[in-house]
Image (cartoon, rainbow, N blue to C red; front, side):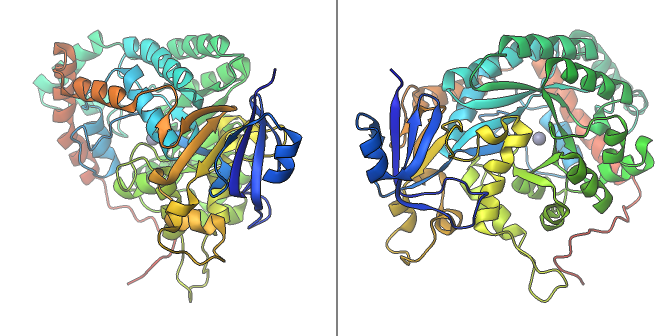
Length: 512
Ligand SMILES: [Zn+2]
């Protein structure tokens, strides 16, 4: 017997990327098994499926599950672990000193926080310190998503250069105080970094393991063009070709990255990826704050997606991505929270609001533009299908699509009063927050209902995470953290000594 579910709402917004404002009033989504069978009025579908379990009392807003396309699966934030926001480059050095928590518990908690804010699919770009954590943590992350019941597109990471700065690592280390470079060398011998072979073996093994899984897909996540040699990127492309996955990487996040890439091989980061055959519909670039017009056109023409991280870009002071220009160029833009949102809360609904407001250009400029509520919701739903490799199966509630459905409490969003003429998508973008999310269905399974998880205890996981964060580091971990903290001022000094960048922002918000 196929399980039938009717998710009922005062409005159903089935396809945010479709006709603006289209919503079924007094509607419902009929779910059969893991897929959407039909969308229509509740009255009509209740007659068609008399035995179906009904979720929702008809007062809420039903939307497709949100897709978070750039994340690292961390349950505790960098700030919670003691790292203040800074420019990206010195911040990254400090980030490497943060205490590693148990990968399974950390990711379970992260997945729960995302689901609570309406996210049903996450693109998790993996990161690891050493070989032991590379293999074990990857397995633990995937097991966490499997057990929570969340949909994930998981990127196995790899890098082979520029670990500390844009300088050759050997040269950078040679210029450090001898005891510090000696300690880094000693640590590198004990904490072996994964190689290209390790990467290929891990991606191949995990892709095979989850080949038939209903909610898990594997990607390659070379950290970014700056951190990868041409040889490594070719190897990544070959491996992805064999296992049939996609690629997600950070790209042109900071002005320093653009300056380095313009002088470096390939004549720019995106041109270089293009030359190596790495662009295409199964490829997505996180951040992409500093794309030139030519690079935006390359992304649009090749079908390469951009994953926009508005909060992260503000907190790490890398600049504002020219969203309007990328949209105009025809780039598929999706949205991610990167584990570092404006309120430090990983609330995807608040992130959507930030995207909607941050990119409103003043009237009177040559190019006044702002994304509509429908545009932004489309970026966080349907546009997320391509970079996560789920395609049209997620991000819209059309017959045959996977049943990832979110029911938001519209009455609580409205508060004391909201004009009855207010469109539901405008209400969501103006006032929606994590606390308004009532029910989350992933692949036809109700994982969250009435503000609580159906199979998990948030309190138990949170308590376990706190214990882990409070625990002492092991001696090797403590040495690593101390060395990374000592490196941070040297990274700062390296970038402070670079000539001021003369790059012009292409995104005019103000001028002196
Ligand atoms: Zn990131």
